[in-house]
Image 1 (tube, rainbow, N blue to C red):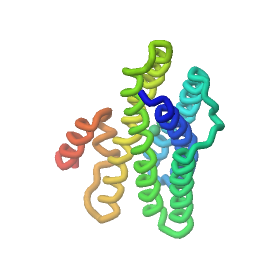
Image 2 (tube, protein in one colour):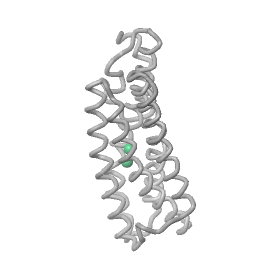
Image 3 (cartoon, helix red, strand yellow):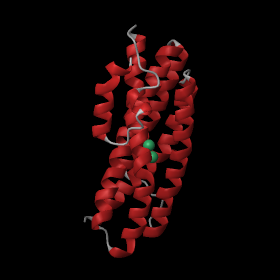
Image 4 (cartoon, helix red, strand yellow):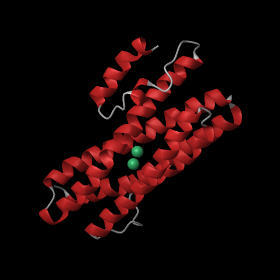
Length: 197
Ligand SMILES: [Fe+2]
Ligand SMILES: [Fe+2]
């Protein structure tokens, strides 16, 4: 394991979660569907908890949570851009369109968040014994929530677009109804949507 690169992953993870809090705050302002708003409020709370969990990993490994890296700056820039994009949509688009922009922004943010935790799972298996337990515990706690954040919101983005286009949509999306927690489950849920109409 390359230690500097592992630290880089952790810095990016912390920045992704901190940016995620701001992304959810903006997305909730764009949400008009009550079910979606409730989902995102739950994901916001979970993301605030993820910031805490990553901070505890930093303490465990003796890393400075304030340390700046070029990769971390890029993650922050992307997060800020997503928040700005939602602000633009909120001030210039219809509420229906702004909600779709928010769903797409959450999917973009969660794609990175999901990848981070997947990678941490790989790292945990190879970590030195003294750190393995802490990394594994953190990863197990968060992994299912990250699956839900990504797959369920991707389902919302698709169904909101379908409704926007004037076609029959499944609301809440099949990913929500079937409580999808894996990529294969998401593919199955998508396939089942026509039967759910
Ligand atoms: Fe997260
Ligand atoms: Fe997430």
